[in-house]
Length: 149
Length: 150
Picture 1 (cartoon, each protein chain N blue to C red):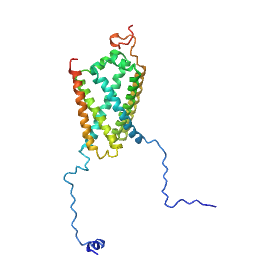
Picture 2 (picture 1 turned 90 degrees about the vertical axis):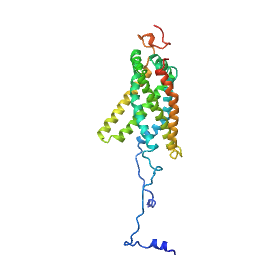
Picture 3 (picture 1 turned 45 degrees about the horizontal axis):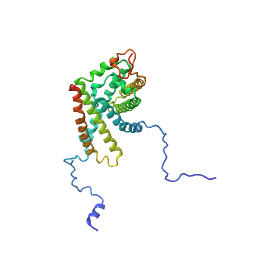
Picture 4 (picture 1 turned 45 degrees about the vertical axis):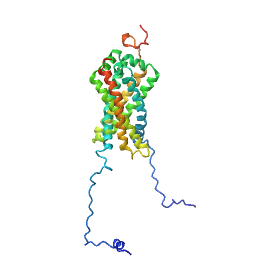
C-alpha cells in the first residue's frame, strides 16, 4: 500500500472562491471608460458648444437633426451609459470615503443605483423612441427635413 | 582585530550612557511629503470636478429627455442655457470637464506607464498647461456666443 506524503515545506494552498471582484473591475472600468469618454465628451462639447453658433444654436430642431442619424444615436447612447456609470461609481467611492455610518452608506448607494438605473432606462428610451417630426408640432420648431403638414 | 568591531560584539553595558542620536525632521521635507503638494491638490480637484460633473449629468439627461415631451417644452428649458449666467456656468463646466479629463489621463499614465509615478508631479503641471490652452481656445468662443450679438 502506497501512501502519498505531502511534499515537505510545500506552501499551504489557500483555496479562495473565484469571485467577481467589484473593486478590481470598478478600477478597470474607470480607466477604460475614462479614455473613451475623453473622446466622446470633447466631441460632444465641440459640436454643441463650439461649432457654428454654439449653445445658441441648440433647440428641438438641432437635436432632431442629430438624433435622426444612427451615428449620433450610438454616440449619445455610449455617452449616456459610459458617463453615468463612471459618475455613479465615482460617487460610490466618495460615499465609501466620507459616509462613516453604515445606514447612511446603504441609503446613499441605494439612491445612486436607483437614479442611475432610472436615467439609463429613460435616456435610452428617449434616444430610440424619439420622433424628430412629431405630429401636431409647430413647423417652425422642427428640422427642415420634416414634411410640411 | 580593531577595537571597534570587538566593542560592537561585546554585550552592551547598561551603566554606560550613550548619547541619543539627534533625529529631527528635515527642514524642507518636500521629496516625500504627499500632503499639500501637487499629488494632493490634483486628487482634491479631481473629486470636486467629478462630483460637479456628476450632478450636471443628472440634470442634463433630464433636460434632454424633454425632446420626448414636446418641442415647446425642450425649447423652453434649453433657452435658459443661453442666458449669460448659464453661459458662465457652461464655461465652468467645460473647465471642470477639461481638468477631470486631462488629470484622468495623468492617473492612467501613473498607473500603467513604467515611470509614471516618477513623473507624476511634472505631469500635473503639464495637465495644468494643457488645461489653460484648452480654456484659451474655448472661453473666448463661448463668450462670443453668449455675450456677442451673433
